Image 1 (cartoon, rainbow, N blue to C red):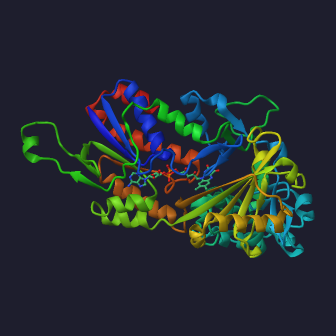
Image 2: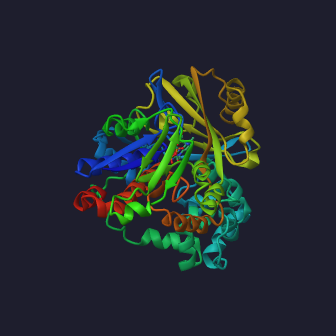
Image 3: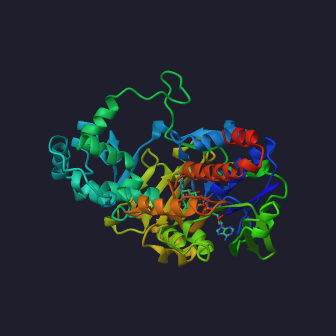
Length: 496
Ligand SMILES: Cc1cc2nc3c(=O)[nH]c(=O)nc-3n(C[C@H](O)[C@H](O)[C@H](O)COP(=O)(O)OP(=O)(O)OC[C@H]3O[C@@H](n4cnc5c(N)ncnc54)[C@H](O)[C@@H]3O)c2cc1C
C-alpha cells in the first residue's frame, strides 16, 4: 500500500486528492491523506448565501476557455450546475476622473483591433490613438529579454495605455503591478505575436482572420460560449463536490503541517532485499506520519518554509515568488437603489485616480440568478500589490471607505442591506520579471527529490483552472513514480 500526503486543502490540493481517489477506485493500492491548516476546505474559495444572494469571498468564476474546471465539474457530476456569464450585458468601464468610460469594443487585452471604437473612445487621448495607428505601420523592435508588462505596452502603445488600461486590468485580475509582472509569464501569446509580426495590432488582425482551431468540445453553429463560467450556488460547490467524493477519513482539517523531512533509504534493508523505507515524514500537532510521496499544494512562501531544511536553494527560489493580498467587500442593496447603475459587469480603477478601490463587479448583472430579482450585489476589491496596510483596517472602516468611493464614482448613497468582508492574505502569486527562469530552477530541484510534487498558483497560472491542473499534474507525477511498484494499468488509466 503506497501512501501520499497532500498538504493544503485549497482547490489545487483538492484536485490532487481527487486524481488520487480516481486512481484508488481503479484498483491502485493507495492511501492518501489531505492536511489543511484551516477549519474548512477550499482555501481562498469561499461561497455563502446571504438574503438569497450568492456571495463569493474569493474567486467568483473561471475562464471558460481553460477546460480543467468544467471538466472537473463533469467528473464530479455537477456539470448541470455550471452557469455562463451573461455576456449580452458584458461591458467593463474604466474610471477616469470619477466618470465611467467603457472599454472600447475590439480591444484584445491591450491591443486595439477595431478602428472606429478606438478612434471614438474617450479612454485615450488623440496622441495615444495616433500611437496605436502608428504601431501597425512602424512597430518597435521586438524585446530580446523578459520585461514587465508595462514596459512592453509602453514600447508599443505608450504610457497612457499602461495607466488607463493595462495597470487597472492587471490589478483587477492579478492584484498585481504591471511594472513588476513578467510579460513572458503573464502574456506569453503577446510575446509570440511580437516575435512573429513585430506589430501587435497586425498580429491580432491576422489571428482574427485565421480559421478557428478545431475545438475539443464542438459547439452548435451560432452558439457563443460565455467568457466566464461559475456554479449556480457559488464556486464552493466545486469544493464540496470533491470533498463528497474523497475516501472517508482522508481529510484532516485544522491540522497545519509544521515540518517535513525525508527518510533516507536504509542500505542494510536494501542488501537484504527488504522493501525500501525511503519516503517522507510529516509532523503535525498529532505527531509524525510516514508517506511514500508528498504534494505541497500551498502558496510558494509556505512551501518554502517547509522545504528550507531539505533543499535551501529550492526554498529560496520559492520564497522569491512575491504574493499580494486582497480584500473583497461585498454589499447587498435593494435593486431599486441601483437603478442608475450603467449596464455592464462593473469597473476598474486606475491607480492614477488615487482611490483605495481597485475594481467593482455588478454581481447581479454578471451572472443570472445570483440574487433575487429585487436585490443587487456590488463586489468591491481593495488591496493588491503594495497596499497591505488595508488588511489591518477594521470592517467598519473598510465599509466606510467603500461606501464613500461608491458614492463618488457611481453616485450611490443607499445603505447596504448586508456587508460581507473577506481578507485573503498573501494569496495571489505575482509572476515577476524572471518568473520562468525561477520556475525552471524549481523544476530542476524538485526533480532531484523523488516523491515530492508541488501544486498551486505560483507556477503556471493563478486562475482556478490552472490550480486544478497543477494539482492533477502533481498527483499524476507521483503516481508515475510509484508506477513500477504498483499496478501499472491502473495508474495509466487513472492518469488519463
Ligand atoms: C479575492 C480573490 C479573487 C480571485 N478571483 C478569481 C477568479 O474570479 N477566477 C479565477 O480563476 N481565479 C481567481 N482567483 C485566484 C484563485 O482563486 C487562486 O489562485 C486559487 O484558488 C488558489 O488555490 P490554491 O489551492 O493554489 O491555494 P489556496 O486557496 O491559497 O489554498 C492553500 C491552502 O493551504 C493551506 N495551508 C497553508 N499552509 C499550510 C500548512 N502548513 N499545513 C496545512 N495547510 C496549509 C491554507 O490554509 C489554504 O487552505 C482569486 C483569488 C483571490 C484571492
